[in-house]
Length: 248
Image (cartoon, rainbow, N blue to C red; front, side, top):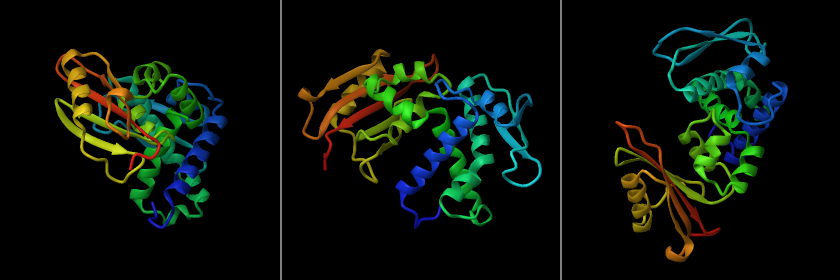
């Protein structure tokens, strides 16, 4: 994406185009079935068996003519299949985001097109209006949101929380090692506090959701929750730290 564009403008263009695509596909309520959405948009979904690439778009004619085939690899996880198809839908409609931003599609770098496709996929599987409404209604409970948005992975839901208004820090830990930690209020999230580490450790050890509320937290932190996303041979936890409105 062009660096001179304000992030808010880019985000607005992505959300606008995602809403338009979902409306055109008559898919307004979660969970969003990406395969059905693709078909309703005029894209053919063909299955390709095991492959190194989860999905690829075979485009016919000029960019943006709506014709094409998404070749989808087999994957045991349905969330990965939905993500792969949503990404290719984003790829086929990336030109609309560039148009919304006043950029000619042919002038956009390949990396920018890939970024748009990735971000559009998240906006499609987790539509902003319904996701924000449900997040607030469900107190941003990751597992409750996963139940409602079944076609999106836990990690995608956590990442989408960073694009919503409540100020938060999201941390993902795999096998006891922090993979990433981000905030929607600062370019760089601060190190984990002892309280966050304790909540994470409890979720990791017990395999159960853990929470610590404001009365037991230092100034600037409103709530800490951790959810274990664990399998027999793999332990992953996602930590959501809710911040005071102006913590820094």
